Length: 255
Image 1 (tube, helix red, strand yellow):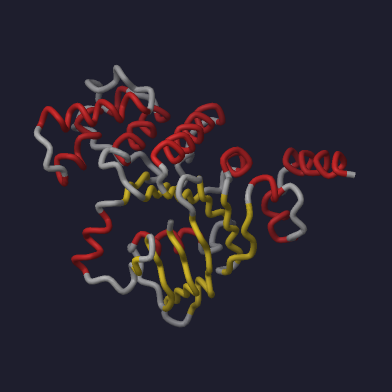
Image 2 (image 1 turned 90 degrees about the vertical axis):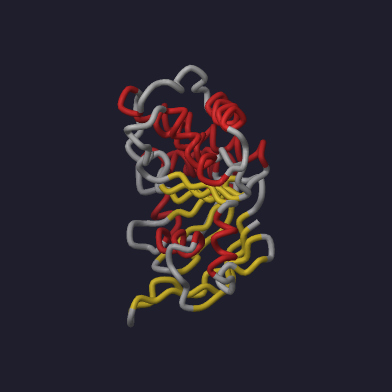
């Protein structure tokens, strides 16, 4: 579990995050949503340590990340898995070698065991026979799945995903969502996903924080969104005619 307490972040005289409080739970897909420029990316960067908060606490299972020494932060980062907006694979390495990369860097296992673990991760994301291929030989969706396999290779306690469905078609996005949800549940890890994909929100949003102009304007889950009276959230979620119609139908059934 990750807890955010009274988090502020300023750049010179501009306050970007204001008194953010949130709890991201184990075994659930935790989503950070909001418009471009709302502060959600800055929040994610503070949580993983790419930025230092101006004020506040970031607790990893009770451990205050902000107060840690540099060495302690390095050790904690070994418990984190990261999935970037682009798959960020090494083009000169095979798929299997890409998944092995964090194992080669940080694991004390021998080569055979590292290969075995990497193959297990590829099997988990349904890429059993792709190990010998290079990133340029597989689709964008498959590359994202390789990135997921690499992120879980070291069996992290915490998994961070920055727009994991960026550039993917709706069908492939659904596959990625289901994989992330399944892995989160199976491994009982704390997964935080930064997204603007409304299909992801309505599909796997078990715990959602909506950031509006640097504040935590709403928290809840995908079911509570349908009955939310928060106008800022409604304007964001139901901006498209499709989602607006879904909400209208849901409200009609409740009457």
